[in-house]
Length: 159
Image (cartoon, rainbow, N blue to C red; front, side):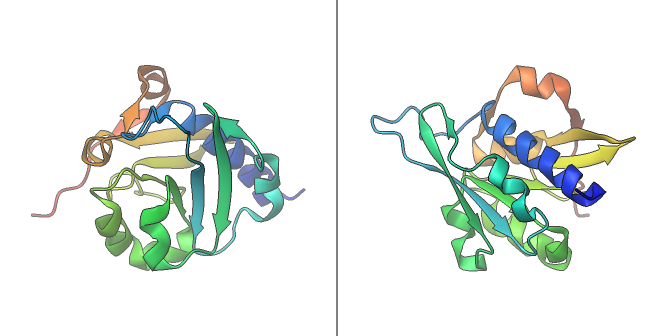
C-alpha cells in the first residue's frame, strides 16, 4: 500500500471508532436505524473503506455512501468532506450547520472553519481536532473520553 492508502486506512478506522463516542439526538431509538457514512468529493479513501463495511455501532448497521450529491448531505450521520471540495467548504458547512451531522475533514483549518472533526496527520500520527461550537449547533453529544484525546478548536468568527 502507498502512504496515502495507509493514511486513509487509518482514517477509516478512526471514523468507525469516532462514532462509537458520539450520540445523535435521535438515540436511543426503538428500532435502530442505519448509520449513514457519506463521502462528498473525490474518493480519497478508495478501498480503505472496505475495512469498515458491514460493521455495526451500538446495534446500528453502518452504510457507506460515496460520491453523494450536494442535495443528499442532510441524509447523512457522518459526512466526510474531501479536500477536493475546499472551495465549497463554507456552503457545505452552512447547509449542515443546524443538523445532527458529524462533519469530518482532513484539511488544514477544517475545524476552525466550522467542521466538527478534523483528522490531521501530525508527525506520522492521526490526531483529532474537535470544534465544540459545531458540536453544540448539531446537538451531537461527544463523549468526554473522546474530547480528552482531541485538540479543541475555536471557530474563526467573521467580523
